[in-house]
Structures are given as structure tokens and as C-alpha cells.
Amino acid sequence: MPSIIKTTGVLAGLMAAVSALPAQPKLSERQTDIYQLAKRQNAAATALGLADVDILQFALTLEWLEASFYQQGFAQFPDDQFVALGLNAAQLADLKGIGTSEAAHVGLLQSAIAQAGVQPVQPCTYNFGFTDAAGMVATAGVLESVGISAYLGAAPLVSDGGILSTAASILTVEARHQSFIRSASGVAVSPSPLDTPLGPKAIFSLAAPFITACPAGSNLILTAFPALSMTSPAAADVKSLVAGTNIQVKSDAASNASFCAFTNSGAPGGTAFTPFVAATGCALPPNLAGIVYVTLTSNAPATGVLTDDITLAGPMVMQLS
Ligand SMILES: *[C@@H]1O[C@H](CO)[C@@H](O)[C@H](O)[C@H]1NC(C)=O
Image (cartoon, rainbow, N blue to C red; front, side, top):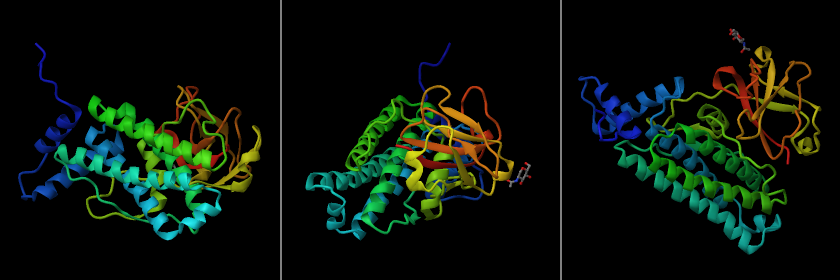
């Protein structure tokens, strides 16, 4: 007879980790927590056997990054720089409100993780590379897109309905942030009918360049894919690109790559692949809009599904519209 007691994913993950602890040496409670965390994150990096609490830690890592981004940006750039971009008082208040809600997401995730008996990850030190308010707003638009893709990509990995609901309530607000930034930047609010999920390793690869260092116990055991960047056309000219035009990219892993992958939808097979040659690049496929994630891959599966095992470099973000 099946048990009528339902064990949630979080509990199952914790129990598995506790039973795997060595008898010696004795660890402090905090060390034990970190040990449990590291063990399960290791498993997560190799297979996608993530416990729900690991997904919460992954989300908290991203929320710390976002909250720190707004906090540092508003500390650095005075209001008049934002007003000079054409933002009115209500829009500036909305932009600052994004920072406030990212900080609230940090608090919510910290308490959900602590309730699962695990030490929440701490903030890292970051290098956002912004030099003015315009650069900050442009990067904010990309960060909010990446946030949406992170929550969408993690959703199918969550087993506990309560955690999924919490994550979904964060996701819809991230989508509103992105809509606001797009609208305030004068581009179409919703250029495409479906947003784009990306797996944790791809998301971490996008976040990693902003992270300088993390305190002990707060590093995710995810490794980033080799970096990918565009050499032609210049970022400013991307919006005028038409399907069929070649783009040229640069990566240490380029010599092994056979395809460019353009991920732009959560529909089954939301990735389009085109042949890649290191000297000439690859052609832009049709029907892309908004933010597109580009990776170099070893294969082009007919399913149109991008997976970690075929990914060689990237993703990089391309804002087409
Ligand atoms: C290309 O693939 C081979 C075989 O997997 C590997 O040894 C080599 O390091 C790769 N080269 C690059 C530039 O990634």
C-alpha cells in the first residue's frame, strides 16, 4: 500500500543529504548546511537532479545580483541622469521600485531556504560595468529578460507546488519589470508571443561575467560555458539585421562548433540552428523577435531543443527588437 504521507522534494533532498553525511569529522550546524548544499549542487551541475532548495538558492543568487545592480546603480547615478534619458517622475519612481522589489524577492527566497533548514547563499561582489544611467537602464532590460528566462527554465525542475507558486509570483513581476523598461526605452513591450526558458547552466553563464567573487559557501557549483561575443555587426546595428544575414562571433571554443543556435521561444523546439563556419559565422534564421539567446553547438537536433550536452559556448544576448 502506498504511503499516504507525501514527502516533498525539499524534504526528500534534505534527508538524502543528511544520510550521506560522514560520521567524522564533526561539523558545525552551518558547515553541515553548506556541506549539504554543496553536495546537492554538485549533483545538480552534472545531471539536472536539482532538489527544490537548490533551485531556490539558484534563484536567490540571481536576485542578489539584480538587487545589488539597482542598489549600486542608483547610488552611483543621480536622478537628473535618468530624467535626461526622458523618464518622467512617475517612471523614475517605477524604475526605483524595481530595485525595491528585487530586494523583497531576496528576503522571500532567504526565508523559504531557511525554512528548509539550509543556509541561504550570501551576496557576491559584482562588476556591472556601467558608467552612466543610460548604460544601467540598457543592462537592466537584459537582466530582467535573463531573470524571466531563468524562472521559466527552472519551472519544470521544481517538484513542490508551493515553491512553484512562489516562483511564479516572482516571475510575473520580473516580466512586468521588463515590460516597463522596454516601454520606457521606446521599444515594443511584447515583441514576441512567448518568452524564452533557459536552463540553469546557460543562465549561470550569462550571470557569471557580472560576478567578481562570492563568499565561501555561496558559490553555486555550476560552471559557465565558454564566453561567446559578437564581432559583427556592431551591437548598435543588430536591430536592422534581416533573416539570412551573417553574424560573426568570437569564442575560444569556436573551432569545435558546427552550428549557431538561436533560442527565442518557449514553444517546443524554440531553438533554430544554422550552420557555423569560424571564418564567416552563421546566418540569422527567420522569425526572431525581441531578445534572442545565441549559443555555439556541436549539433542541430531536428527537435529544435537546445541542451547542455551540445552547447559549446555562450549564450550571448542579441536584442533584435
Ligand atoms: C575541441 O574538442 C576536442 C575534443 O573534445 C578538445 O580536446 C579540444 O579542447 C576542443 N577545442 C576547443 C578549442 O574547445
